[in-house]
Structure formats: structure tokens, C-alpha cells
Length: 595
Ligand code: GDP
Ligand code: MG
Image (tube, rainbow, N blue to C red):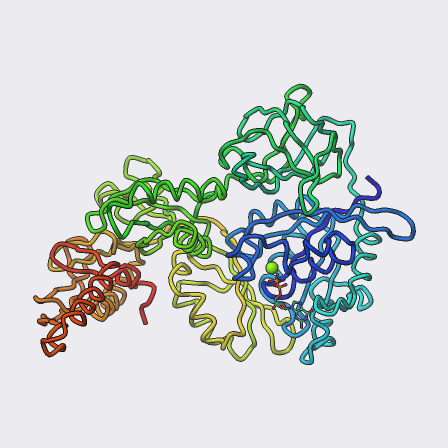
């Protein structure tokens, strides 16, 4: 145990975490040439393409330092706010963290939010200034930012480059010298923390864990605390580039367990593994049942694909327990599913995987957050869809989720950032100058305002200089009303939104205007109306047109005519018939595109 080090790497996106991880694997000879491939830790295509690590993994390196052999366990953490609970569990499995800051960018929002998580768990922080090979590196300025942030000495900061390999041996030395060895008791009852799991089609769910106390042997009968389920440890082992089975693992070790588990639901990140005989008396602290915060409807474009869509989602769920879904039907869209996601990025990933891995053509409705509705009878209902809101006479009040957001920006954009946040019902909680021209704002905002176009707006008003990160801070009561959209007098359930009553009129007006742009002219007038209850608050009309695309073909050429008709048919694919009106997919997301 004294020669084991467990650590993670925390960084703002693109500051070079994956690249540096690869260099560590290379320097320790963990990769053979054949295995060498850029960014081995990001093994899903989608992750690699986007350069983000969606699921955390772990990998063990062996390193000979001054004639002694060390086991270094690198636990990878997901890089996005949607997965901050998983980040916190990975961090809880470590004694130390490499804090990477891009020397050309300086400290960003995610640097800070991840650092706070690491400090909460008393991790030893090794600050690293990365990308030192670049001409526009600003080592003095960034060094000062790091010193201000964590209060270290200038000599503690390692200057590195994932590209050239500069500083990598110094980093390895720091891991061994500065990060403490694990301190658990191998003779105590077993207590192992699950920090991740993956699905394997041959072996079922593989859970990754860190043993805090005790020992686990192959064949042991174990229990998972949160689910109460018991399993036989068919195989245990350590994670090199491939799984290497072991007979026994002990306090301080990081490993995997295979025990015939079929569904990802049974393996909860943050859960504790113990023995059925001689169990530990309490679970490792910090376990939470993560609940989806963002919901949207997903419908097949072609109603016949409903069963196929269900099968695809079930497969996705095997890999991703945080995806939840249940059947729902919409008068406008027919049969589909209400899906819950951890956040907007998670939603985008699922949509993209449905398209790429399953070739499913789907319509996604406007996302909304998870609300709590308090009824006059004293019940509390979780509302995942605006149309599921109780009737007004039965509804006492609504609560919506709030976030605490960290925004870092150049000081010249602070005014614009504040205006944006206040327009989104935000309040300023704190403001710190990191340097004379960089400011960190802590804002409290309703999550429901962020799911719309907040991030894009923030990027554009700050010319790309603002960074943003958040965590859920709790629920608060809000004066929300349901705004319905009617097409030729028919309410379109998939277009309903919950909106703060002060913003409802303006919002209804803009929705109608946007829908007018998005809904193509048809052979009759289309009335677009926004309503709160029975009251119409805005209206637009799409004027009738007689659209005959073949008229342009001057008769004659029949193949050309057929091609045009086919093209028109294809264009219709992502259209939905709502009453007598053809509505394109883009209209269902109109709210995301309001100017
Ligand atoms: P991550 O999002 O933190 O995992 O960042 P990546 O490791 O994916 O790196 C982001 C981008 O920066 C990639 O294009 C890398 O090739 C590049 N990069 C990473 N480290 C360095 C470095 O030390 N020097 C230079 N010049 N580029 C780097
Ligand atoms: Mg990465």
C-alpha cells in the first residue's frame, strides 16, 4: 500500500487533460506501440470526436522511481458539468489531483469548480501549467493566477507540455513524493467505493471501485449497500489497458468486479461494496441517487419505428444508467418517450447516439427542467412535462431547480454578462477579481433559464472569453404559468412551456413570430396563437400560398419532375401533421432559437 498512489486529473475542457494522460502512459511504458493511439482514455468515437471524456475510466501504471516500483492509479474524470456527481465520486477515490491549467488561457470556470470538489475531499493538489511549448503562453500571469487560487509557492507549479513531453518526469516524481499513499485498514470489514461502471455485451456490467478498507477475493459473496443486492464476485482484477484478473485486492487498490449483473441500474456510482458476512457498518459518505434535471420528448419521425426506438433506448440505457425514459403520447406527435437527462450536453449526446449508432430518425421536443408541483391537497408531484402540470384550481404553487453558477470573464464584458444573467432572473452572489482584468462571478439562476440559449449567448456577448460551470443548488418557489401554442385553434401539446409570468407576454409574442418564420406556407391560412389558459396573448398568421414546385419544370422532362417530387417528399420527412397543418421539426425547438 505504501507504494500505491491514486490520483485524478482535473482541468477545464481543452486544457490538455487527455493529452497529458497519454504522455504519462507513454513514459511509464504502459502502452505498447501497437496500443499507442492518441487519447486512449476516450474510447467512444463520439468522445474522441468531441474531445470530451464522457465516462470516467481508470488505468494502472507501474513506475520505477529510484529503484522502487510504484503502482500509480490514474482515475479519469468526466469533463462536463452534467456529470459533476460522477466527477465528485472519482475524486473521492483519490488522494491527489493534477490540476492542469493551459498556459495560454489561464484559469477558467471548470478549473475552479473541479478544484473546489478536490479540496472538499482534502486531495493533495499538484498544479501544472500546460502547453508551455506554445508561443502565446503567459507563464508569469498564469502562475500568479494559480498562486492566488490555491495559495501554493511558485516552485510548486510544474511547467509542462503534453505535446513535447516537457515536465512529464517531474510530474511523475511529484505524484510519488507529494501525494500520500492510501491509508485504509486491510483487516477491517470490506468497504469499496464504486466510481464508475461500463456495460460489456459478453460479461454484463463491470463495476470499477476503489477499496477504502478491507480486502476482496475472487469468489467472495458481496453486497451493494444502496441497492441491497447480493452477488458473487466471479472475477476481480486491476485495470491496465486491458482487465487483468487477480485473486485478491486490498485497501488502497483500484479495480473492477464482474458479477453477472445485467442492468446498469443495479450499479450506482457512489455505492459501497461490502461482504455479506462481516459487512462494514456504514456506507461510504456522499452517495446520491442522481436524478435527471432536464426532460424532453423523443418521438420517432415515422410512427412505425416506435418499437425500434424503444429497443434502441433500452440498449443505450445499458451503458448509461443516468438516462431514464417512459412512454408518453402527444396529440401532436403520437407515441414516443419522455426522457430524462442529467443536462443539455447529456441530451445532445443521447440524440446523437440514437442517430449514429441506431440510425433512428427522431423528433425531440423542447427540453424543460424537472419541477415540483405542490397541490392544494398537500401532495408534491414531480412534473417532467408542462402538460403534466395539475389543473390551476388544484395547484397551490410550483418550485423550480436553481443553480449556483461560476462565470469567469474579462472585466470589459462583465456589464454584458450581468445584463444577460439578470434577464434570465439571475442574482449576483459574489464577484472576485482574479487579476486586474479577469473577474469571477458567482450567480444564482433558475436552471430552466439555462436550458434555453444561455450558453450560446454568453459566448457571443463575451466574444468567446467567458467560461461557465454550475451545480444544482436547490429548489425555489416561482410564479410560473403554462404557455400554450395553438395552430388554427388546436393546442399543440409538444409546444407548451412553463414560463415566468413576468416574461410570458413577451415570450408568447416572440414564439409566435418565430413559428411564423419556421412553418412553411400551406394552401390555407394558418393562425398561430399563444395562450395562457383560455386567454390569447399573441397571434400571427402564415398566409396561404399555392405551392406547385413542378410548375418550374416547363412540362416535358418527366425524370426531372419525379426527382423534384422525391426531394419534396424527403423534405417532408421531418414534418409532422398537426391537425391540418404541416409542422417541421425545427418548429418544435423554436423556443431555443428565439432572438
Ligand atoms: P482535454 O479536453 O483537457 O482532454 O484536452 P485535450 O488533451 O483533448 O487537448 C485539447 C487540445 O489541445 C488538443 O488539440 C491537443 O492536441 C492540444 N494540446 C494539449 N496539450 C498540449 C500542449 O502541451 N501543447 C500544445 N501545443 N497543444 C496541446
Ligand atoms: Mg479529454
